[in-house]
Image (cartoon, rainbow, N blue to C red):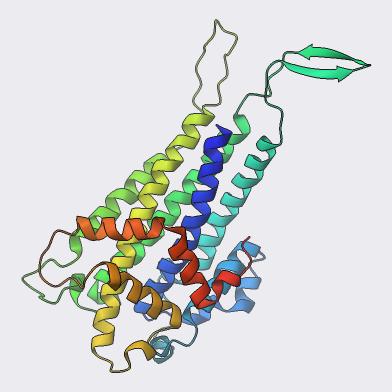
Amino acid sequence: MTGLACLVAADCEHLLSWSDLSAALSFEACGGQLAAFDEANLALKVSPQVSLVGRRLRGFLKDSHWLESRQGQRTQDALSLRSIPQIHGACRQQWQHFCELVNRELNAATDNPLILEEDGGYRVVSQANPHGESLALASDGLAPALAELTSAAERRTYRLLNPEVSGLPGYLTDEGGISSGLMIVQYVSASLSAENRRHAQPVSVDNYVTSGLQEDHLSFGTSAVLRLFKQQSNLQKVLAIELMCGAQACDFIAADDPRESGLFSRGGWGLWQLIRQHIPHYTRERWVAKDIQQLDALLADPAVLQALEQQTGIGDTEHV
C-alpha cells in the first residue's frame, strides 16, 4: 500500500506541473486577462500553493505580445481560466497532505506483531499498526483533486473549440461547415473527465468482515491507492488533448500575425513548437487517436517537462 502510494505521489507531482503548463497555453490562446494572476491579490488567498501556481503562470506567460493586445477587452474570464491558481493550488494542497502521510508511513513500524525492547528484554505486542486507514483517507482526499484537475482541463479545451467564447474557428477547423474538426477529441476529454469523477468517490468507507471476525474493519487502502493510477492516466490524456487544441488555436492566431515567435510568450512559443514537432496541424479529417498517444507519451517524459520549465525559468520556482 505504501509503496504504491509513493509511486502515485511522484506521478502526481509531475502531472500537477504539466497541468500548469497546459492551462497556461490555453489561457494565452484564449487571450486571458492577466490581472487575475496578480501577485498581490493571490497573496490574499493566504495559500502558499495558490501563490506558487500564480508565480508559475506569470513566469510562463511573461512578455506575450498577444496577451498584451487582449488586456482590457473584458472585465474577467470564465472561472476555468480565471481561477487556475485557486483550482491547481487547492489540488496541490491535497497532494502535499497525501505526501506527508506517505512519509509518515515510510517512517513507521507497521508490522504485527511488534517486538519492543523493554527493561533489558523484549516484549511481543499484537496491535494494529498495519491498518491502512491513514493512507486510505489520504487517497480519498487526493482522488477528488485529480478529478478536479481533469475537469478544469476539459472545460478549457471546450472553450478553445467554441467560437462564441474563443473568437477562433469553430472546433478549430480549417474547413468550417464540412469538417467537425477537433470536436471528437473534446468528446474523449469529457468522457475521461466523467470517469475520473466516478473514481473520486470514497473507497475508505467500504467495510467487510474477514478472518473469522478478527478483521472486522478494513481500510481498503490498497484499493484506494490503485484507483489513483487510473485517474492519473486519464488526467494525462485529457492534458494531451488540451495541448493538442491549444497548439491548434495558436496556429490560427499566428496565421494572422507576421511576428511568429515574437507574438507569444516564451513559454507559449516553446510549448507550441514542441507539440508541432510531434503532431501536425489538423486540417482534413484524420484519425486523431495517434495524435493523442503521441502527446500522452510526451507528457510522460520527465526530461521534456524539465526542459520546458528551465526554458521558461519556472523550473527555478520552489515547489510547495
